[in-house]
Amino acid sequence: MLCTQQVGRPLFLALQDYYKQRGGVYKLAFGPKVFYVVSCPVVAKHILRTAALKFDKGVLAEILEPIMGKGLIPADYVTWQTRRRALVPAFHAAWLSHMVGLFDHCCEPLQASLTAAASSGSPTDMEALFCSVSLDIIGLSVFNYGFGSVTRESPVIAAVYRVLREAEHRSTFYFPYWNIPGASYVVPRQIRFREDMEAINGTLNDLIARAQATQQSADLADLEARDYSKVKDPSLLRFLVDLRGESATNAQLRDDLMTMLIAGHETTAAVLTWALFQLAQKPECVAKLRAELDAVMPPAGERVTYEHVKKLHFTRLCVAESLRLYPQPPLLIRRALETVELPQGTAQSAVTLPPGADVFLAVYNMHRSPSFWGADADEWRPERFLEAYDGANTGGWAGRAPYVIPETQPASHGGAAGPPPPLYPNETAADFAYLPFGGGSRKCIGDQFATMEATVVLARIMQAFDFQLVDDPKSVGMVTGATIHTENGLRMLVKKR
Image 1 (cartoon, rainbow, N blue to C red):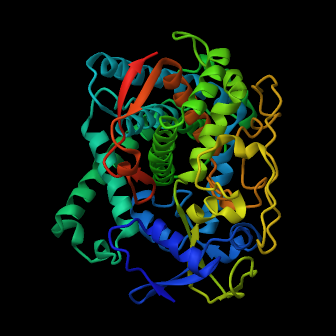
Image 2 (cartoon, one colour; image 1 turned 120 degrees about the vertical axis):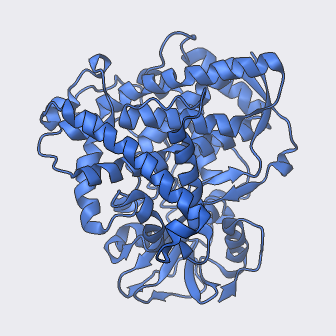
């Protein structure tokens, strides 16, 4: 059993140090609380897929329930089943294809800000800009709400950011003092949180009421066959309100929307931040990326489409590699509902989890382990996904198959063809050594949306601008809560190409 003594370091980095000492599964103590830390894909696959029904979200659900309620991430299994059946069809092929144009539309204020920064010659915090554009995309695609956060900050936007910070605070604080009766009326931080939640809930409830007031009930097949280029409101909220047979309460719809807001905002911003951080240090990758962008991307003023995204092979690998080196989140959390015997994998000995045992799935460790990614596991090298890797002494791990880039084919605008083919390497090809969106039945349903969003934004800014780090790369640092952030922003000098 180990005790964390590395004050000031992100938890996931401390867990990586212990992994190197103690192997694929070990115990970690936080005072009286004990966690099992899993850094082995064989064991992770057992927890996430084979024995998934024997686990719930545990500590994570306790942290997020006051924010997300019964949304997909913290929901109990029964609620999760019901909501997943309703939400997954919303991410159908026609809608995802239409969203590519919306991503491009939301890039326009970002590009205007970068043009102004290039003219001024002053350093620009790209992490902050990525947070803003990601929030704008979520607002329009999920709620049909224009945050406009690249150019302004409204009280609702400020409340959203503070709630995100509170979620991170709760994910790392050792004692849940916010559960003490009356804390939300006495503790200044919790008073602010209660007020922020009231402001956000008021906005979400108003949006739900507006959507319901203009409801146009339709069967799933009809919704999937819509020509979204002619739909005034193409949001997920509109889909859920119009879907015939969908009987979610207003409270459940609010929980769904809040979950998508939190889960879909800073995660994409973080991926973009770290992709740009790495590209700024790798001119050979920038040259390869630019060659692809110049050959594939439409000029400014002409919309990016799903067909363009499918041809951005190297750009998508840049996004995938950033998700590998900087997984969002770096830890997945589960709690055993009953006794669970784990496969040994790369653990020093087989482990049996007692009922109630809390588990950290250390995604950061698995994504950077030489056992699963080779001697250059800490290097940012997008082409690695095109290579097979068998590993050595990996306790039953099947190895990584090379990612096969999907053939170029027309985008489907009907429901019968199902979702677009995977546009990024996934957990199956890596036998669970790659878990950017989790795995198994509770894998993130927004994976295609998130990767396409990051691809379009990265492509647009790299097509038009050059970026230079202001600070020494070693001083940028990493801090974490729900996602991996820079320590003090990503300051860059911007120049027009």
